[in-house]
Length: 316
Image 1: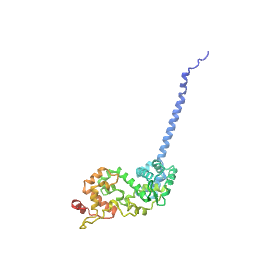
Image 2: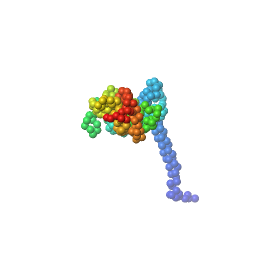
Image 3: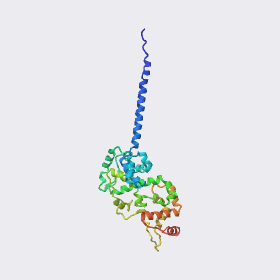
């Protein structure tokens, strides 16, 4: 008996098993991709490893040997749980890419720093900044030469402003009342505090060929944000003023008064309106912060009671 030919409309049904195989293969490939991404995200890049080691020594109290071993035997997430550095590193990469006019993107630089399996990114960035290694370069769109330390301080300022924006609660933490000065502009908080984030910045800059001379950096800081060799100290001009007709204006009084009257001039760009309002409405907060600035920025003890009396009845 002759077999009846199958209708052409039935042919697609024969492809179903093959389509299922393709779907299974696609799923397997997707799983492989996800696993590869997870593995990549747990890798500890060379630069991140250096940052983590330094943080474990300086902030967690480990010895060099202990920190080195910990970095060698930990995943990225494990280290991040101990040092919590990725937020500051992200801001550092954004600022470095922007202020040094890198051709690589901030996300490319960040991934290379954190997980470090693409040296081409660092090599390209190193070529971008080759012209600043002699200490000075021309900023994009400007004709004047600038000292390279100025740009490093600008990067530190960006990180500082971001920290202030993300840590408003620390200002109101009574256990940290002696550190409220940290919410002022970078040039007001003192060199040691201002350069604390070199922990995150220096290994990145070193990887792209920029070394930091700490003495030159401090010299620049002492006139920041104005050009080096300038006599103008900006918002600190009035701090040491003790003049007046009778010479009775207490040290720091003009600073405290201006801080209260116009906190935006003194506070970090990342400080919230809530912080500004508190200072504006409180003699005590303005004076306490002035005392902290005297200690950490000026190396001077100021008389808070004398400043209070001046703010109540003194005149400039």
